[in-house]
Length: 118
Image: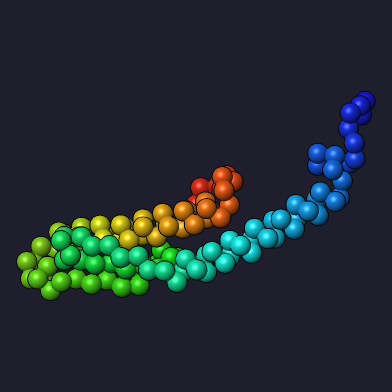
């Protein structure tokens, strides 16, 4: 029955291959952690309404600064101001995520990462 099968592990490579895979996984984890630390230090800025609202997020997609031009408040249109804030924050977060995906993709080639992992 067991024709053509060698060893008892994954792919017939035995424990040596398993140890090698574990070492590679650890190296990848260490590399990923380093990239994430570097990304966390970066800031991403976006504006909306011609600069009426400016949002700044870090590489962890956390809002760290929000600036609203006083003239945008004077108009009294709260709904428009809310839309501008939302647009600026979303664009800054999008920039941060794109940079993260770019950095991770460059570091790990074309390895398939599950959605949301980066």
